[in-house]
Image (cartoon, rainbow, N blue to C red):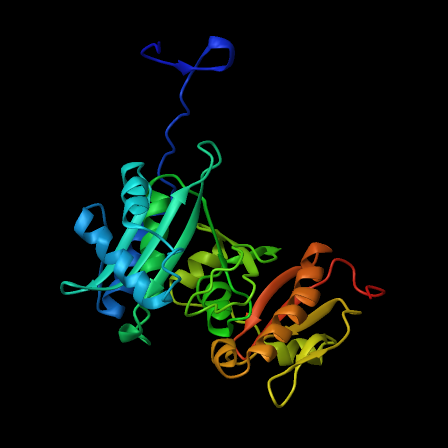
Length: 311
């Protein structure tokens, strides 16, 4: 039996429930930035809880990912459970038409974090920064609930996603995850391994505040090269991986120009890129190196732990 001020603990002892998190100081500015991003994208972003809205999110994701029916990215029932538990599901609308959606859930009660599980935007809204509007809404929602950090994963081979996450949003890579989801076999990933880069979005850091105000985190691989950076993984004229060296304080790691097209036209080449990136970027991060940015021309810029004698 529980008392008015406690919940059952180990050995029958009563424990106080965790104190509710308070809104972060940046919450009001974040709300204004999110509203500005939604206006620029010509959408209205709102939290979703009704069953019909959650069913629309399921259908949207099904159209984007074209998954194996046995393994959809979400189900309506899962979304319903997440919202009932107070987690985050939001959609971006043009009138009554759902153009994008984002789903996240809370981490441990005491650590003030969330994990953003999935976000997707219809191809019909390409080029309108609907994804940016969704993420800024998620940031404002989280800060208003005392969350300091949101984490998520993305495919590090996808050039445009790397720039969006690291440049446009100001997130910072934390860990390389090998074949994290196993074989999903959908219309985007195909049968490729699902290696992912885990990033952390420190919601009220100067880097993130600037990014959300419209000043992305700019990174210049050529400038880094002029200062002594070396190519740990290069890219040939035919868009194939070229192994290099990591014997320097700053290392550049390339990705293909369009891995999704490559998967459709030359799946073997896409697999070679996956293995090369895993062997280079994955090994560097495991050895303590840090990704300092991403040049939208297709280069991760990495500061090694100490430089020299690394391979």
